[in-house]
Amino acid sequence: MAKSDTSSARQYGDFVTQKRIAFFTGNYDLVPDGVARTLGRLVSHLKDTGSDAIVVAPTRGAPSSEHRGTLLSVPSIPAPGRSEYRISLGLPRSVRGSLASFRPTLFHIATPDFLGSRALRLAQRCGIPVVASYHTHFCSYLKYYRLEEFEGFLWKYLRRFYRQCRHVYVASQSMAAVLQTHEINRGLRLWERGVDTSLFNPRRRSLAWRRSLGISEVDPLLTFVGRAVWEKGLAVFAEVVRALENQGIPHRSLVVGDGPALAALRERLSNTVFTGFLDGPMLARAYASSDVLLFPSDTETFGNVTLEAMASGVPTICADATGSSSLVVHEVTGFLAPPAEVPYFADYSTRLITDWQLRRRMGEAARRQALRYDWNTALARIVSYYDEILNPRIDSAQLATPPLCDAAGPAG
Image (cartoon, rainbow, N blue to C red; front, side, top):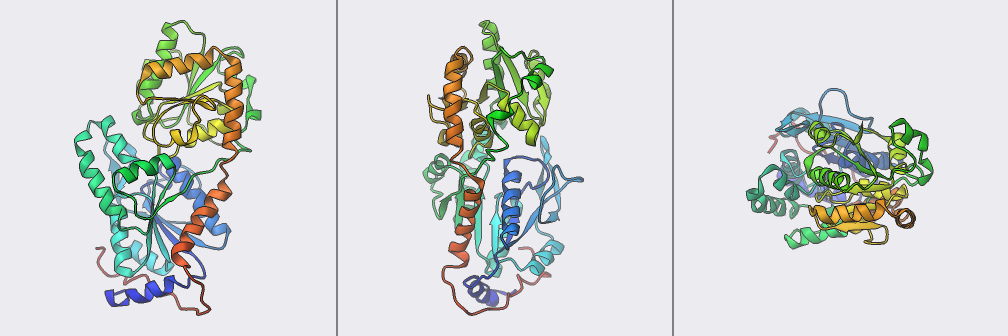
């Protein structure tokens, strides 16, 4: 589609009879992280409710999990130091042709990477409205890779990127506040996540499973769940466990998850039980069979792990940072500690480990809090945000969908 044709695309956007959403993300089936799971749920919801979706993302061999919707693979290379993820190299002509055939009414960009920037430019050329969701707090990762000097540059890039989007969907009020501090405030919309409270449920607690791991019924179990990467607060977790051991406080520790830092963490924590990656009912059993979740990550935008533990009736000790601070009610459902401050995390862990009544009271409060987060409500909300853009008014006129653009044109 040439520049002179963009007005027809915008006009069509006013009379959308079926939402056709094109997603652009750095991860859809590479790693089963929070981004991939959330987008997978959204794609399924769209298709179940009469809309359609297509996903553009890098791939690598067999997918890490099942997914719905058409997935268009783009060229990519392994991410340095994190080969489980991949860096997209742009939008090739074949993918642009498939997008043109799909005839999207909206672009939803989930990652502000090179693929996201190419998608943004393509949408602008073709008159397609663009929204974005802020899944990953990239600036908070820099200190874990000794790249703090690039923080100013990264915020400048993010401001420029998100100011070109009609909406920016953010998962928590605490994350929205940080974005606003850095002048990313155009079109901000709150899009909280949900949790499956039937799956993540205190009734899944299993003493037999604990015993199979060599953990007795009476030993308080301190658990970490998540990707085994340092930016999830693994160093803090390890130091807290060692502090408890040095103080002779009876407990056991458990790590659920996999990732590049796992081997190093095993070396630090010789008495800790490691299950590897768990999913579905097995993950739910691990949560419910724990007594305390220690999740020191200060890089979250929401905190799916925290919410899943809360739904399982487990009190949580989290960093008082974006994401978790919007979920945990301090001294009611758990504790919020200053990020990276091991003495606070250790003190809160000691209080919960040594007081079963406090654990029970906070766990019950956590479960009640988690019941407020429903996936159907969360998914319906983002569809309503799409409608703000696609259907600002309803008219009886029916227009034919124009092509996205000339698939043979330049990628931009």
